[in-house]
Length: 138
Length: 248
Ligand code: SF4
Ligand code: SF4
Image (tube, rainbow over all chains, first blue to last red; front, side, top):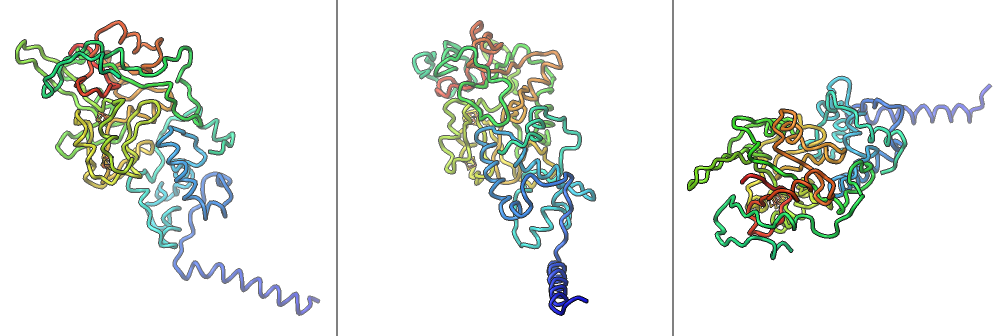
């Protein structure tokens, strides 16, 4: 028979889980759609906090130096995270970028200029895809 | 540095003046590097000053009624293709006529990718910039849309985006409130392709536009510029343009 302590611990765990599940639901958070690949280019926790830094760093390198690695490129994010429903990362409130940004009330202007959808039939760039699978950190 | 080499013609208002002279000699400043090719630069390798991208346009081969280059530019870069006063045009096909001799020419005009670009000089934010390999770009992340560069450009090469845009080419981000101009299709150049206009003109059999590395003496463009007299439009301004013309 489980001890009282064990029961309490289990109860606490259930409560915590319920709390976690409830809080976003109550605040109206949509669950961001899952990306296409197995995992993101960096750990999810790291990405949650630092994706903007990675993107900014990469954008400057691409813009000013012509460095076109794909690992931290916004285009790469869009290709993987565009939702099955809209084909976009920001067309509906459930789409990947829009969902979290609405929840966190952080307005971004990326999509004023950047495409929110991957290019339909974009020809593969041999050098780039090879580099991406090689896990180049840029 | 092209100061001594330029043919002096003092009529500054004479736009599109033919001042061929020796300007071609000054186009590749700095050290000429033999045997080092720009081509096949790895994606993680920055653009290098060993390369200077340039274009040579033979106006005698630019056909009447053809719009291959402007159409290809619009579809590559997601422009509407419209030519109204508020529409972005990165390359314009101009028709010029010498009133004295009656000689007529088709002249595709685009950003001349100046070595000493006035647009970069005047930009208050650093958004207008020249890449190491000579390609002049606007960093839209920084551009505040003041349009100072548009006024400074002697070639009227820049456009301002007035309306919100959607469905951009993922490789060519562009949007309202920023100035833009020809990028030499930098997204293509970075993967060792030629600009869309060059490809379209060649595909159509006109072969009026050549693109290549002006610093590489073995490149077709450098050889052509060594063999023929070429023209820098408004050479009097001393901008040392990366785009040169033949036949005007
Ligand atoms: S042609 Fe105009 S926009 Fe292009 S580099 Fe020269 S000044 Fe700048
Ligand atoms: S419009 Fe943009 S690129 Fe042009 S001068 Fe102003 S800030 Fe610079």
